[in-house]
Image (tube, rainbow, N blue to C red; front, top):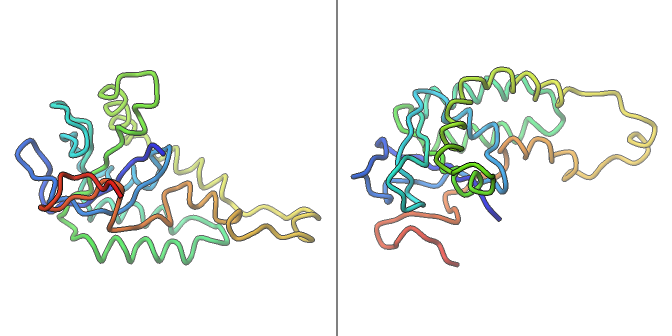
Length: 193
């Protein structure tokens, strides 16, 4: 599966930074979810990818503290039966693994490379779109708002997996220190297991 990857770092990644400074946070298949974009939407800077061997900026970095605050404000507004434990898990995981002055690093090129546009252009378009997230937030909140259940939903309640699906699409529920691309000083950055 093509994925977008979210890491944390104590330093702003640049051409001299070692990938071993990146710590896994989450990954999401076939999309760059709204929550990932919210987390990197504060003090956003393009940066060199630790995954792709390209000289240009194919990743985005944003400050952790303001990003978490913005994501928490969004999550607090969601009215959905599955949100409470997933919101608590997300905020606990993020706050335990980052400091406010750390950086989130979003690696979207693997997903964006599936489109027709050159990857560098798609990453720049994604960066510019971070300024318009408020409208997307409102649309998302409207789609997640509770609706009256029809007769079939009352008789045959959906499985928990079905209930959680729209929440997971936001980027919730996939928190992990170990991602497909994990970095430490002893390897080349690729987890080939």
